[in-house]
Image 1 (cartoon, rainbow, N blue to C red):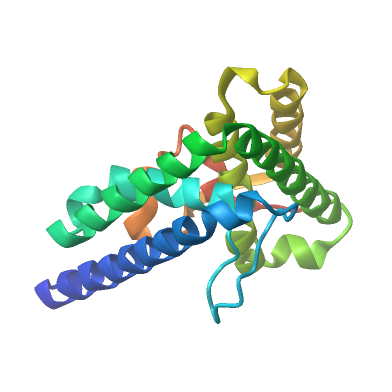
Image 2: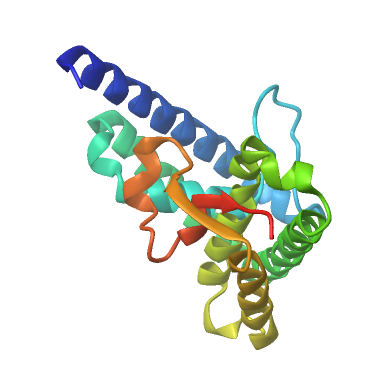
Length: 202
């Protein structure tokens, strides 16, 4: 890889991180309102922006935190401020937060289960790697939500996730990291194996 290609690669990676930070800040700005809704995903009408979810915020918080040495000083400050704001919101609405996070776990689990069920009957879906790259976000977010909920999470939820993982593993074809390379250090293959390959036909 030439010096020019390295610089271009780093520029693209930083652009993705900067966008992720902006999304995180927007989610925090609306988190208080989101917690008062019954929605799993809350669309605030901002064009091109993902809906507000606890899981979406947590995913970005963890990976941006792990890769913060690639952010500039101002961006690291913005990340710290946004995370502190989020922590304050959650501290003031603990009961509501726990209810919303459990609801999101249920919604994400149903979504992931439906995808895996459809994989079993659709060769077209199995071959659609672009769709899987987009859909794998759901499995990542499920993990973030389970980590956030902690030891009070109902035990059957962890068992259900393990069952769904085994179902995917029966048709798994390992390959290279499927998301943008900038994110790979935040997702080691030992833990996030579903980001290193694609579903395969039986």
